[in-house]
Image (cartoon, rainbow, N blue to C red; front, side, top):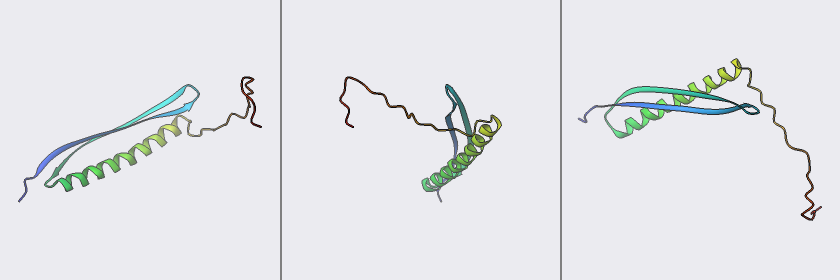
Length: 92
């Protein structure tokens, strides 16, 4: 029978989210868990499950932070101005 081993898994997800011109929100979610395993495949599977759970927690945390700070809606805009550089011939 294979020997049962114990590992500590520590993972962190950090996102830097632009909320306004020259303003950012940094959200960081960390998790630590101790697992027991006997095969490498079992360890990999448990690590994947831990990572998936952390991703879900991060998404919930980001949503809550954006809602609480009232910065959930970002309006995108494009630059519609055309600059004419006299050093180049126009292709139009």
